[in-house]
Structures are given as C-alpha cells and as structure tokens.
Image 1 (tube, rainbow, N blue to C red):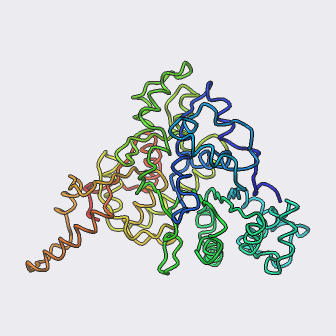
Image 2 (spheres, rainbow, N blue to C red):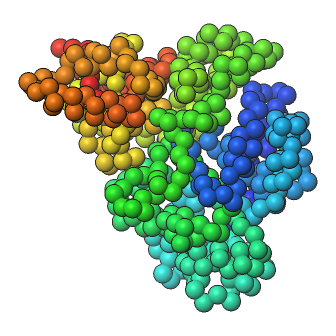
Image 3 (cartoon, rainbow, N blue to C red):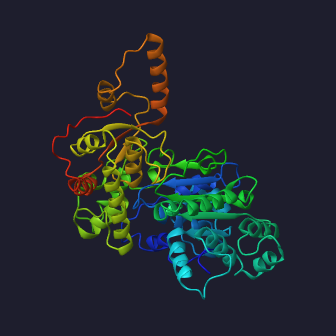
Length: 465
C-alpha cells in the first residue's frame, strides 16, 4: 500500500523549512511542545478544526516530521522555536521516537476510488470505504517484515481486524503508535448522502479511540478537519473522547492556525513583499480567535507572491478550485433553505453589521442543518464568517437581538426570572457573534448572495439566537 506508516514523501512542512529564508514562513514549532505534553496521558486525543487554507495540513506534516522514526537524523528543526532552551528537554525526549500512522484522507479517498474501479485490485470482503481504510492500514503495517510476522500470528486480524493488528504490534514492540488523521471529516463532506458509510466510519473511529478499544495502542492521536468532531446522542459520541479546538472555541491554540499580527508585521519586512500590513489586514485578516486577529495564511502567501491583494479563496490548483466550488455550493444551499432570519442576517452582515447566534445545538455535519443558528455555525466552520466570543459581555448585536424578539408574550415574574437565568447560562456558554471578516470573504459571499436575488424588500437587522 505505502504512504501510511511513517511516510516521508510530499511533506509540505519539510519543504517550507528548506525555503524559510526565501519565502513567507511563520515559526510555530513551539506547538509541538504543547501537544507533546499530553503524550501517554489520559487526555491525549486532539481534534483541531479550521477552514481550509489555515495551515492544518502543514501542521500535521510538522508533527509527522517530528515524531516519526523515518525522519531520524535529518535535523529539520535546527534553529526553530521547538529547539529553544525552554523546550529543549521535551524536544529531545520525543524527537523521531515513534511509529506514526498518517492518514491523509484525501489521498486515501482517491486510492479507494481506483480500488473500487479495478476488479484486479479488489479483495473479497473489502468493499466499502471504511473497510478499505482498515485493510489499507493493516497492509501498510505488514510492509514491515517484523510486523507482518506478528500480525500473521494473530487469528483476529484477517483483512479488517485493525485494532487486533495494532495490539499485536504494540505487544511486540512494547511501544505505542502516534496517529495523525488529516481531514477527518472528509466522509461527512464528500459522502454526505451516504448515512450507512458515515455510520461505518464512525464505528471505525470509535473502535480506535474508545478506552476499551484500540485507544491503548496510541501515545497520541491528532485529527484535523473543517467540521468539528460529529456529535450524536450516544454515550460513546466521538466528540466526548477528544480535546477539541475549533473556529468557535479556539483556545488554547488560536495563534497556531493562521498568521498573527506579529507574524504579518515580519512578513511585510521581506524584500519580496510589496504590500502593507494594512492592505493584508483589510483583505485577509479579521478572524478574531480568542481575542487575537488572525489572517488567512494561504491567501497572504499568495498575495505576497503576486504583489497584489485580491480574492485567492479558490486557489490555483484544481483541488483547491474544486473545494472552493463545493463550499460555494454549500453556502448557496444554506441560503436557499431560507431559515427564518437568514436573509436579513446575510444582508446585514454584508453591510458591515454583526449578528448573534448559538452554537450549542450544531451537530457538526452538513445534513443536520435545522435552523438559522446551524447555518451560521457552518458558515463559520467553512471560513466565510468570522466568529467572536463575547465572554459573557452583552454586545450591541445582542441588545438589538433582544429588542427584536418575536416571542414577546406576557410573562409572570417567576417565569421571566427562570428564562433570564437559563438564557444567561446558555448564552455565556454557547453565544457567538458572527461577522464578515475581510474583503476577500465579502467578495465571495456577495457573489453567492447576488445569485439569490435577495436585495428587494429586505430589512437588515440583527437577529436573536
């Protein structure tokens, strides 16, 4: 199979470091120390979700290059933050000490499509994508001769017994794996209308991460994606296993995904940069994460390269354009669903306003969008909207929202107190403020909204959550 256990080819972080003196480069390697602090501890499963273009893959490649045995002796991190005195002990302790299972879900999807089309490649009993994933990981482990021998001795492995294969190897090596999965949510985005496949995939993840499943085989697990880990009503919901870091709840990793103001200030000093910090901020900044102004790094890099601020959201590659087109279609679909208030919200936001919404009931998928709040949550996850957490403070948008409540029925004083107490607690935890973060996203949204012919007779005002 190849490309799963300790892969070395196509590492974007290694490439970036090799050109760091000639290109835009932000040293975020101290992130490694924060993640490494949790190795082999109870809370060692992480999920970091951000819009595309915010550095999720390059960070995953950074962790791969740091942890994987295959990179031993390459001195990739010399002179970077992770080697500083404060991080030195942790750096040396974990450097290139692990077998890393790296799952690039985009690549695995493409390989599965080839597999499904070619009968010569197919194996009896391995048909669905989730089955193929298990089979592919096992076959990759078996490319190590020692691992192939111990896996072959286990009667529980077969073609799809992934947890049994992992346990057999761990018992043999007396070591645990590190698992990195890039774009964990691909199944829910690309196969949104295949609930059976989604259920199979969720069952696979549960088998890997539940405490009585394969979790004991991992010193650390790190997932990236656009959508937060999916919620469901079961006690074994996957999101309960993970420490999540999302666009709506970015602490404590807010500064590690996207460029900060300080990093942009250094960028504009580059001889190759002909743009000002203010130009970059107007076009690509404005994402307020944990009190910090964060810039879309992919767009900044493109603008510095071209010497021009414009919309780079669709990117240059065919994959990026396809992703952009899919996202635009998703936004158009959300708007066509016409939830009460969504038209008013979008036009108000495009006019420079803010609107309050709740993220408390968002199920983190594309098919469970049931309300205007869900739609705004998804727009934040996709990157079209920025998101601020008011931290319990009453904002102008929320005051306007309360003034425009459409359920102003008479309440007794006890009923009013109970409602206010509940709403206060609920809003402090789940209340967010949405806005259009910059010129790039405003242009992208305007193109979509114009197609809906919404500009006639629409009142623009903030809405209540």
